[in-house]
Image (cartoon, rainbow, N blue to C red; front, side):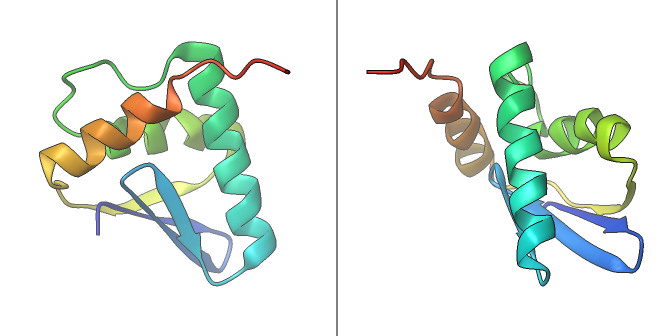
Length: 92
């Protein structure tokens, strides 16, 4: 686990740049918000010690959730997950 958040009565986990939640609609909304944030800002700074925590804190402002717990992820997993998401998507 990397970051555990609470949205209302539901909890979700962000690990390696991917949200997991028991509510599929909420999970989709969280993932969509994360991807839009990454496309707008470039995501967490390269070399950040805890990119999942940085991303959760940044998106929490938009979605209004609380970060409950945080544990450091494996550096390779988290770093490579966000590098892949930074790629620009072209519409062709």
